[in-house]
Image 1 (cartoon, rainbow, N blue to C red):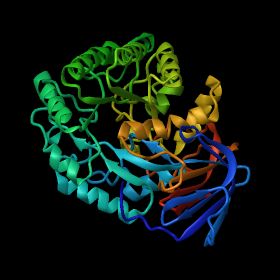
Image 2 (cartoon, rainbow, N blue to C red; image 1 turned 135 degrees about the horizontal axis):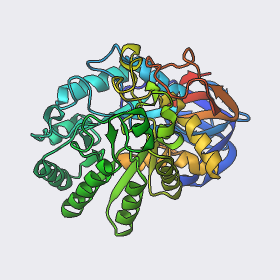
Image 3 (cartoon, helix red, strand yellow; image 1 turned 120 degrees about the vertical axis):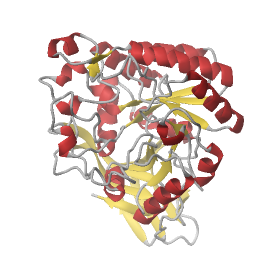
Length: 432
C-alpha cells in the first residue's frame, strides 16, 4: 500500500452503522482509530482519548471503496485531469484506493515513471494509488517489460489497458513469465481486427445510425484465446470491463471448471445500453461500447451472482475538445469515479440485493483482485473508511463534479446515497 499519507492523531467515528459482510460486521458501533489503523470497534481501549470525533449517526460506515480503473492522466495528459483533481474526485465518492491503468503518456513501462506517480500521489495525501504496469514496452504488444523491476517499484499487476497484444506468442510468453513469478495479468478481451475502427455495438442501433460497429464476437473470440492461454500457463488473469452476455457465460463456465480468473464490469455498462446513444450522444461513446439490453441485463446478473467479482468506474476524464464532437470522432470514455457508489446503490436496489452485498462488489471483491488486505473493517487494519448517508440523494451536475473531466453520461440524473466523509489512513481527507 502507498506510504506517506499523514496520520492525523486519534479519531473516533461515533454512532454509525458499520457494515462489512466479509468480517461479519453489521451493527451500530463506534470505531476508534490511532496511528492510521483501526484500534478498536465498540468500546474504546483503556486510556484512549480521541483528538477528533466524527458524528456518523444515521450514516453507514463502510470500508473505503476500491476502484480498479481510474485514469489519473499524469504523466502526459494533465490538461484532461490533474492527479490531484482526480484523486479528490475519488475521495469525494468514498473511494480510498485506486488502481491506475498503464496508458499514461508515456506508458508506465519503466520503474522511474512508477516512482514518480507514487510520489505525486503520496504528496497529494488523498486516495491510495496502486499503479498497474505495462505488460509490453510502450504498450506496443511486441516486447515484454521488465516486470520484476516494475513490481519492485510498486506495480500491482500488468496490463495492456485498451491496447491489443495481436501476437499470441507474445501474450503466451507474457503469461508464462507472470505465472512463474506470481504476477497478475489484467486483460480487456477485444479482438484488434474485429473491433478496428468500430465505435458502437453491432446491432440495430448502429445500423440505423450508420455507425461503424464492433460485434460482441470481438470480445468473446479474444476471451476464448485468453482463457485457453490461462489454462496452459496457470497465470492469474483478471478480465477487465466485460461487456457481453456470452462473455459472462464463458467466465462462469471457466470458473466452474476451476480456472483461477477474476473479472470486473464498469458501472456505466450496468445502467446503459446502445439504445441510450439516442441521436449520436458522444457521452455514450465508451470503450468497450455500450452493448444490447440483453447484454446489460446479463452483466447485472453476473455481478449479482458473483461471476463478476468487482464493479469499477472505468474513470476516463476527457476535455471538451475531445468529447464535444460527432459520436464517431469523440474519444471514448466517461468520468465516473465519484459516481461509483451511487450507481452501485441504484443497481443494488433494482436487483434486490442487500446493502452489504452491494458494498462487497466495491470493497472485498476488488481487493481480492488486487491481492491486498483492503476493503475491510477490522482491528489492526488500515483505517480506510467511507461514511455515507444511504437515505440522501445526489443530483449530478457539471459544476458538482470534482473531476477535471466533465464527460459523464449521467449528468442531470439523481443517484442514491451521499458521501459525508472519507477517511484514508486515519485522516479525514474529505468531508461534505
